[in-house]
Image 1 (tube, rainbow, N blue to C red):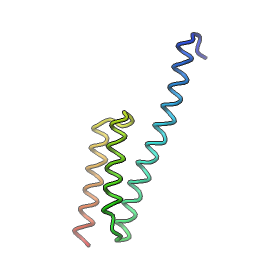
Image 2: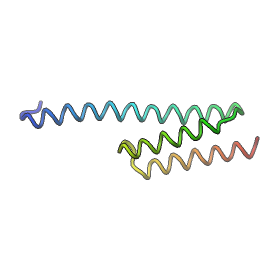
Image 3: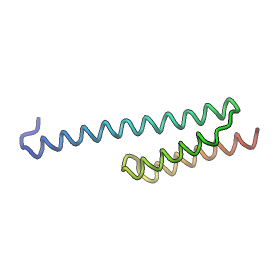
Image 4: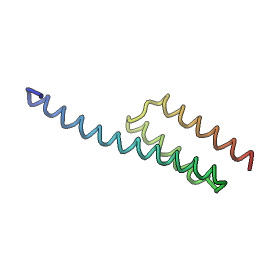
Length: 88
């Protein structure tokens, strides 16, 4: 347990950030999953794709994701998106 007031405050802020980060990461996973599901079912995934990329970019701006991690996720999603669009 924290001993000083500042340490107690750090515990509180760390918990707030953990919850926010968890929420943002969950939103990223859901949006990517929605794009993949739409691509697999041959639905129009353009809007879902744009939304997923936007969600990933917002996570970087909030400091939830490292920029390289976001670039990797976006690259993988782009690859899947382009592959499915060519086969359709």
